[in-house]
Length: 116
Length: 143
Image 1: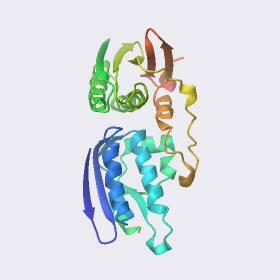
Image 2: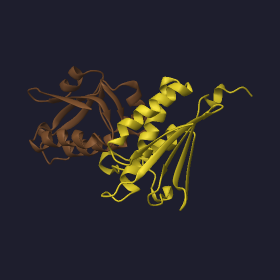
Image 3: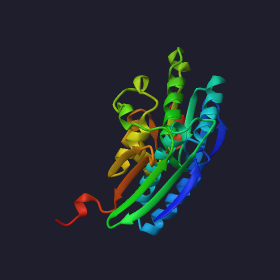
Image 4: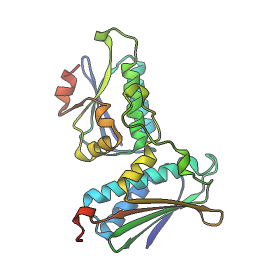
């Protein structure tokens, strides 16, 4: 797994490539937690290069989105984790596990970043 | 029949994925099925790695595959503590974000991605998980 981070004005973009499994999920969690700890709670995940994700990775996504949205902040300061470029195979896992309805999905990163 | 024995540690997952990819190719699985089997085996191996042995004393696990007619069969064996699949509550897939349990998806994914899943245990042979995937979708079979 490789993660590329790009900080934009209001949004952070994380590009996740490779395999997110139980071995790599902790690194993924650390990256998300670092942003959330710093108050950067508007995050777009670009999953175009994600090859596979197991339940360990889904767990990280779920907990991070909960953290991003669960802040007692005014509406305009509230955060979220939104997903762009979900590959068909990964979408299949999202469909099987009900994650399709737990996350806001966008066709590309521009649209996802602009949704904030 | 082909098999691989590895220490039950997280570092094994990438090797297991490569082993199953190679097996799937040799068994003639199409890409979509191969990928689904890989994910199911990843989940099963993760369960063994995280629960079968004491964290400071990981034992071994053996992964084997065979092709029997229309079936691709994978077995995963370990000699750790007995696994009781009935002790894992099924996930509530319709629960909203705030109420979703973060865990419990692994076993569910295995059951959805494979056609048959069987857990056996006895003190001599340890835990043996047998996962079967039919290569022909049921609707494609001639009646």
